[in-house]
Image (cartoon, rainbow, N blue to C red; front, side, top):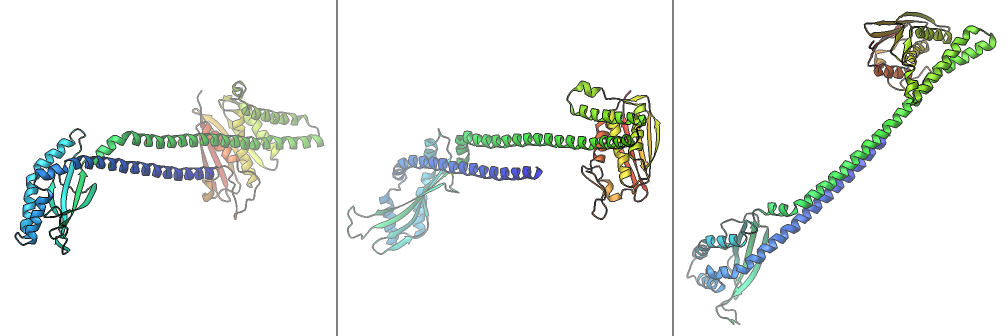
Length: 432
């Protein structure tokens, strides 16, 4: 079941990761589309004013053509050509920036634009006048990372119909755009979509968590049910075994003294059945252990394990606020274990003092090695020798004892030496 849960969680984690990647990719593509739309809107608006800007700043084609001619004929140097164009650019920068800002003032776009002359070729000879970019005009905001670039080619001639192309130039230009606050603009428009994606992922994760939580609750209920069945099956073994022995004894030799033993085992079976019931009234009827009950436990042990010597000392009050079946389970499971693992003599001391019940059971059996002592209270654990289990049983006895001790907020101490013996000391607090 645990492995299945891990597999389920692993599959969900993979699918959730894929879903998250898809959502991120979807948001990224949406972001790029929105960014492209904004840049297209900006370029369309600036294109409307570009020709006016060229006229205003002396950058019309014929003006540049005159500079091309002078440069080609050697009337001005390359540095002078760049200086003249740069002068026009410097002259236009502030005015052009103000115009761009005014266009996008309502939308609050921080637009940077640069218009560059990349190269100019003299068509009759195919020779380039220069091949280094020259900025014709730009905004005060400098273009650092262009979000969009437009390139174009236009021809200029000295006369309108220059069929011989004697004075024709082909110019390559580039227009660079950058919106400095593009991220905030796009996220401002997409925040609702981003929020929806986050909510979808959160909802999927939350539904899965609830599903796993409910699955674990159901699994816990199943485990509790299995534990109850195991416990009851284990507890039924002792009274049934005792009844079998008593039945054989009665069959051989009728003895009325055996009848109380039989009655006690029947009562124990009845109490176990009551524990399975949800009837709280019936359950409350067995919440006390009387002084005489300890003696009955002792007599049953002597009858069941007639070849083992039991020494019993009882120094308890007339009644204690502990479930009789629980106390019987502690005594008989510990003593059964002692006999099972080779004990010839078992000492049982039961004492109540200072609102504490102390149960001490010592034996001279095989003992428990140090390496196994920390495991003996685990469910289904059985002591083994040379990797072989030498005794019968499910390994539930000490597990049940530990659960009962924890039920009453008590503690259990184990002291054992190999081939010498074992002592269990149980302390259970109670209130008068």
